[in-house]
View 1 (cartoon, one colour):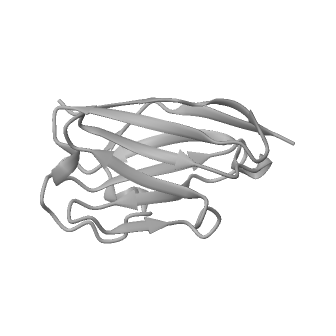
View 2: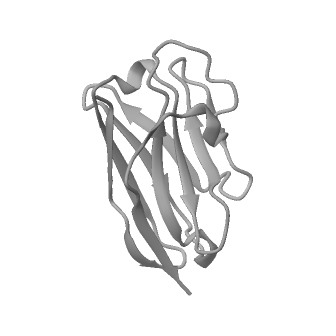
Length: 127
């Protein structure tokens, strides 16, 4: 059974940094399509960053140059390093994974690619 558990959210002031973690069980992040999404109240879920098993990374336009997605295969953990945070980054952040390994990742920022989701971790950025 695939399970994703996020951690690392919190409250920071604008300009600050946070690192989100997503620990996977039931499959390996090194062979999977993985992504981070966020959803603010009253808004649609937005793709933030994605990484495929071959290493290709994709970022949403609003976070390019500020956020970095990475993974630690030994810890089976996905990360999202968030720098220069802005109030508009405030949202619930979700980790997502495609459970079938070594398959095409296609559009990494499309929620339809993924079939496993974490419970979310809240990020709040104050001005």
